[in-house]
Length: 495
Image (cartoon, rainbow, N blue to C red):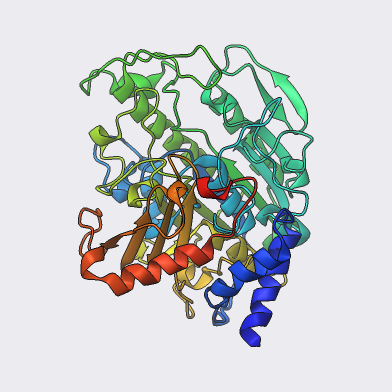
């Protein structure tokens, strides 16, 4: 009866968060099978100082191997290198999935893509993506309720201005940037959004403008935080770099890379809002975009020190999915996936395993590394724990405070699960050393799975399902139980 009680609780949780388009019977049936995976061991209590400010830096389409701490040798990332030297580098952390909107939904709501409301990139008119429901509980809302000032800067992609998914209706006090993913393909856009006000632009490199507003937000928090008797803050820095299109200003960063690499000019198609412009120097431009992102990270760190906020601010740096191949980008040239198989839109490691660096002076050991296996849906319960918010609001994630600090006992995930809703639909499961991938889910449930031993084969070159049929069946069963059908984002056979 205890297992059934957990299942019913999880079903009601999902039902309350906008999944009312599913019947309660369907929810109970699907969730009952995974309830044991949702139950978590209690984390050992850890003595922490006053609640930290939290800065979550999210790059866009940055590969696992695109920065120095993860082996990059052609692109300069001195600020990210310094972040790693003063913090902890995680080598087995994962995004929500392999494309933008559902990965960000997983981050915000603490739900993996088998349970999340947003599971794909779905455009809505006049501008934006399918909105989060009003019943969603985002990590920003959790922190705001706990007394944090909250700000989002960059790319949103989880609901148009004025919709239920508007960032101002999902826990953020302020927002500045691109609301729509398609609009964010343009680095010199026609407009940005300042909260709910459309700001026309002409000839302005938007990331620089967004960065200026982001730094001003930090300025306004100076002297604040629990440690100074004020309100702590949460800053969501959702940069668009280095997503296509490949465009940067002709400044010193770009000029330093021109002529260093062989180039194959890209003839673009900018006839639609989703197209990409031509680029004569795609290699140099991509490198300059990553280094520009690195410069933004460095500016944040300098600002924290200037304002006396450095000592009690947790900074996390990561990316929303693997490297892209659009707009003339060439991830193979830079080894952007860090030797892992796959890119954006793949559920192989290169599409979902991300750089993840955490820094918090005095709490996170400097120059340390962690092999903890976690994912975006861990962020909500982690931030809730740091903020002293009551309970852990998401059923799929767990607090990784012990993994961050190196103190206490860190619970482990029984498994991690991902879905992808393009190219016929894909599924993947990670359980310890084992990784299973199922392709072409649209052909019907119960299809064959590929199985990889990541300890022996981290680049997923050898499918060993035939040699380990019991493991393959176990992970296939997890895939079947972890996916709760969605009328908004069905697999092909569910229409």
